[in-house]
Image (cartoon, rainbow, N blue to C red):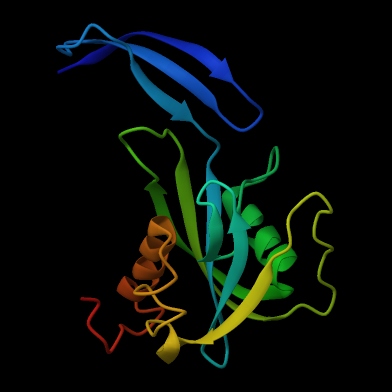
Length: 186
């Protein structure tokens, strides 16, 4: 079984570190490079009327506007569930009535070290939503009826394609918190 012989940071920013690992037992003598990123939390949020809360925002890494779940990185000392609730409130103006942990997932075991912590919440409008941080880009909140989620513009087929967020929704479906789609995903 391979093992890490040496690990070193070769580049660092406030958002990530590039780590070189010398791996004992690998054929290549070259280091194995991976990004060390902070964990983050994502919230599958549904209103009592059965509408999913999604956010639309511009993502420079993808160079396009994306459709995603409310999500973000925990602040220093903040637990993932606290971050998920904070991000939900900041990004959507909704607050949870109940929160259930869905689990945590590795984002990409081949190149990334972080995990996403997935939660489900039944939500209602927040009478006192916190202000969005001034240094963040604008976000549009969408309320999408569950039966329309898989349809063009809102669903997996044509817009909601953030792989980890699709996995979070799938965890909610697997737990029986959301009904399965009536459509084929093919």
